Length: 503
Image (cartoon, rainbow, N blue to C red; front, side, top):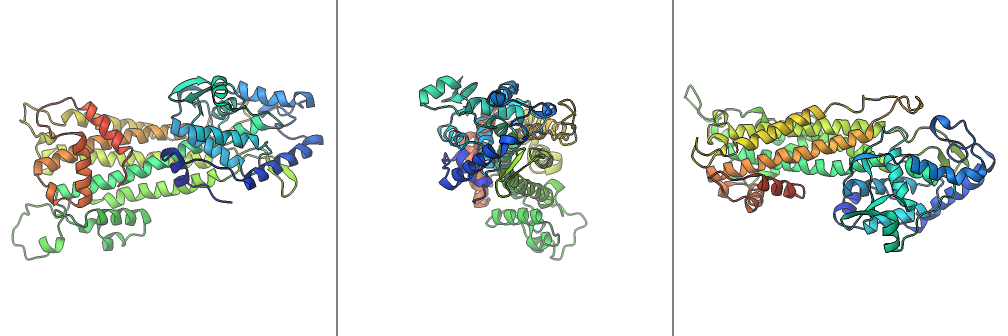
């Protein structure tokens, strides 16, 4: 069976690739469904003929089993707050579809077929940010998915929120029927936190690439020495991420006419007592591989964990056709995802801090010794340059630092203490998403400052080819400005371009 990867989901989300369920998948799911249908006839199976959570001690009569599933779905649609983005919602559906396709849930194959149709037709349930404690999976958010699948609730359709019933009639779509445990199986897993986490990973990869780009341009602006990102220096440490970032910077700056070789400048005979040029740059320029390296390694670790979660059976109970039995346990628990997304959030906050410090270097002539205050290309004192734009970057970075408090260690017992330790994984995912969006804004301000600095120094023709490409991207959005202008529309457009940036 093919493993679902982040790259496959990225193509579905951003390149409009379609999902196609093959016959072997549907056959595997149907086999699981038929086994559970027979196996559960004379046995006590949680969520089939029992109540849920702390009410699992109550037997459900056969004539009420179907209604039980509808009751579960409707009663748990208690989400509130802002809806998830369309990308987050679609990613969550893909994640749930994949885990159900493994054949460990005992559901009817029609559930997967309808989920496939919703993804391929961009008919997406309205799922709210708030509601999950991430223990019995994302019960509340996935209940809103289940509500759509039974033809109720609301969906995003062609840019509007409409009733599911109305859209299904327009699109000639039939809701699913409940057969055994379709309500519980749709709801009982980590797919929302995982789906949001996947979108987070896609965006963090972009942020890392943009940060490497901006850090490399910073080194060109200051005409730094090239040894701090050299292969011999960085291979003296064993960390993969550090070596990866150093290699990316080396590749980026390979044709730059601005960076200098230390042997040419410092290893010749020198007699002066005080050196005009800096022997070593500030840490935000010199230590980029050591700072972005662990951020990349954290991203890489999170990618591995979330891909494992995507391809796992996050449900309870687990229907084991191979051994002809049913296992009750806790595969719906979100600790793996929660911990990784907390770590990812910390890493992204650190990336925003690096950007903010590099920005500060550019706007402060006392430390860069080559640029006017606030990269002001107009008249000092009369014009303001990027003075106020720095406020935006600084305050946004400060917000990231506050948001970086861990959700993973904020378990609060609930559900009559049945859920006595919970993951808070979906909160971790949504707060991580906020930190990521904030960081795009910090890098937006830095991008504008870097471009203005290049303009002041008139070094466009000496830039590396990759550096010049990025400079030209920003220049197409923001013309050179000396007089004070309203900047926020430019910042908005730069951010939109960074969100689509591919180096």
